[in-house]
Amino acid sequence: MNQLLKEDDGEFYFRPSSRGNDHLTLTWKFCEGNIVHIDITELDKAIGANIGSKLKISDETYENLQEIVERYITPCNRSLREVTQHPKFIKCSNLEELQKAVEQEKEGDASRIPYKFTVLDKYPQYIVLAYMPKTTLVKEFIKVKPRGYYFHHQYH
Image 1 (cartoon, rainbow, N blue to C red):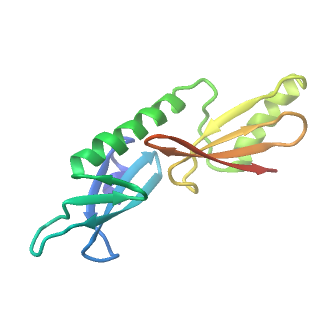
Image 2: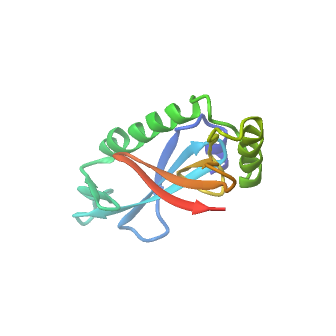
């Protein structure tokens, strides 16, 4: 993993899993220090084969490692790049910094609903969106997935 931290965002490698010989792990540098470990279940693995003929991540099945790259990693990296290039994206080291940035913007114009995006090491594979409609900060944890996003709301 230390080697992966030196690589560019979006880089990844496949490795054997500690879960057993019918699993692989996809280790992915999501963004800066945000490293994601994705469990891959090998299905239909013939005796003596290096890898199963079907690979499963959550409820999605893939034919080979290249298909995982094309249908999982590449779309996720594209989505993340769009977010990190957005003018409202900021680099933060924790939720408190994100909250302060949103509060400062709100102080400038109380009638606006300021918002910011960030990626935090504490939340692998998530983009954190914070906004302040009135006086309460709302945080959304958005999981980057190959076919869309998964939202989790949290009010502060």
